[in-house]
Length: 544
Image (cartoon, rainbow, N blue to C red):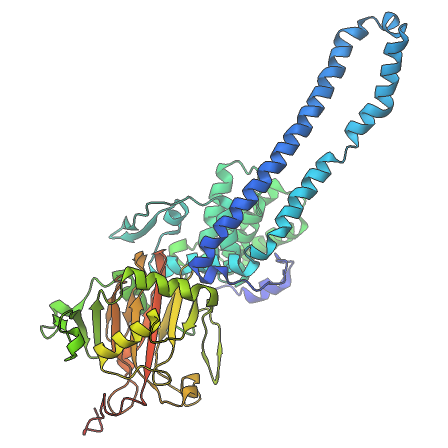
């Protein structure tokens, strides 16, 4: 195998301009993405005003052109006769001295453009930042990976994976759009800048194909061109070891830009490499995905996400059941809750129709102003992370609020004390583009965890409420227990995080699968050990 690292350093490289990254978190919450629609509507209005003003300006220029052309067609056929008239002479001199000057040096076009730019700049605070564009692109690549989607299908607006050698629809969206060559270029460029050539090759291949299909014509709204896509794709193939294809792409690029010195040097080096080493050809489906430090259970995680709950264990374990549940509480006797026991180890149950439509909307509306980028434990502190893409808000409960009523209902169903600080405030979460939360434990696994700041022990149980439905994706996957639960609107899922001896239950390792299609909202209630001494007693068996 030829050595690529020394070659990479030995000649002029394709460099990428480093642009300061503004803090952008729109992509982490679909609510914020939806709000961006109203911003674009304003921009459409501004552009319409600009077009109207420009149309008026061009009509004035056309009128001037028609007037002068008519004079030369009719009046000036006989110059000597025409110029004998002092009025004709005067208008000619005046027109050449000032009218042409006013037309040619008019500031109207600049004023119209400046008015459009000023209106645009007035909306800049609500526009996506560079980080949003990068985050949205990473979201598409995440969906591609987790659900094994074909890039060619995604580009065409469909969600398909290959099953038994044939493309199969994972989901048929009611609304979709195809991607352009420039769209694909930007996704591939994000991967390229991370030195993720597995993804950059696939997306840039589609970009080149689409740009070629348009004859390489440039559009004013595009950031990339066919030449840009060829440039990035050639180097991506080189980095994967496919030097012969990198050479062909570079030669195609030189056809469009024959004086590009850097590419000329690259071609020379590629040719030398191919002389010293035999050429190899690597197909896009033979590329190796980049590894993940945070996702050591990737294969199981992705399999469970793809199944979307279809592997449910009821058919394998006869001890799993459904019933109408009261938990011995008199208040639930007349209106018991439909309980579905999903797993016994760990103990996981689903309560159907736990929350009403009105309550769910109230919770979402109340949470919206406080939504901030979700964080994860990082030692004693908390920080944002790529493996959790969502926004969340914390809602305090009171006896008469919807939150307070939900707390009371949770307490009746679980028999636990959920009042603060024995239960944390209700956390409301809205997921973003490809929003997910990779495998994690809800309970603290380190004594320095922020979970212990309440001084009420560890998180003994989780009660998660589905506030919305989704069309596809977004399941909750229990990795070691080997099952997943699809999003069930208005239902709630409950499980114990700790064994009765206070030790963490490793089988509760779980994940929020990426949302493929839909707007996922959940509410989490984490209940702590303290305050449960007479409600969830320890066992006499220290191993239990």
